[in-house]
Image: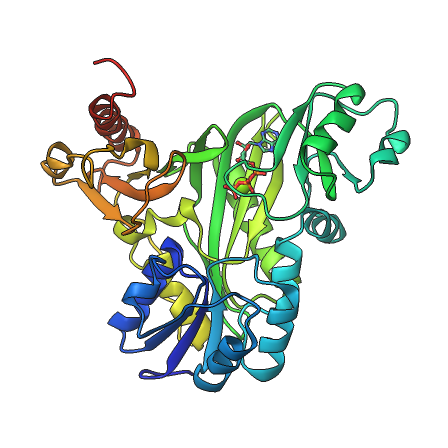
Length: 388
Ligand code: ATP
Ligand code: MG
């Protein structure tokens, strides 16, 4: 076991890292964060912020020298940095998991080899790859860059074969995947933690609603039957096993209109759809990440109340004041406000979230969802985004 006051190294200093830092420091660990952003949400709360690029040799050396274990909150760490860290320190998860999760082509190949169902797809790595497109390819589709996409960025809808070349050019002629647009019944995700011995614990399945490619709302319990729930958990466990994973892993799923479960993508870190665990589960995904990478016993992860998590994006921030007026929201005892301390709000930027809790015995999350949406509308009206 890695015990306090050991130094834990963290690659990435965003909001996911901020909560990891808080959890670890609460437990008496010290945290060193590597992130190039001088205002990174985690950097300011860490014991040390190495403000440098992810491939900065001196910063990587410092991390390796001081940290008992290094983990991540950001999967796009350059492969060479991950390999170097794994050779000179303890990196959890290991470079293979990062390499797979940061490239959609690698990710889909890995999932298929692991017998996990994914949406029909094809790699499109060159402009002439379309010639290999089977005539019966199931349009409509989406062309997605293989690397560096997030929050729906790097994606172009494609209605027919004729759209592929312009879409490929629009995305900068980088390696892409063509993916069938799935007729969705809903989206769900599973976040789990797996320790160095291979023991794992999954958090309750979350149901996720996106707006404009960005996660808007998660509700737990998810409205899926016991069969889908069990299948999602089993697939997530299976993916973690096949990766020989250590740490916190998120698996995003599509539930198709036909009732099939497909994996959309995986994230080798805590996940936005797991933020509900901060207020509505017996342990948060962030404490569980500390526990997993340090080899401590994983805590039971039981839902304590039905919950709705809603993201607060930059467009809610007024131009003439530092913050929206949260007095209405904070007048509700069941609404928990989380802000990430980001200095520069931009439309689409995740600035914070709220967790709205239901009564413990309630079962369904309908009431928390309604209150979360009402609070959100109020903030939108305030920001001039919709009429009252
Ligand atoms: P993030 O990193 O925020 O999870 P991302 O940029 O990696 O997002 P995806 O997860 O691939 O992107 O897509 C974002 C959302 O767009 C999905 O959650 C889903 O709502 C929609 N979407 C993506 N691919 C498909 C598809 N093949 N069929 C239907 N909807 C899709
Ligand atoms: Mg996604």
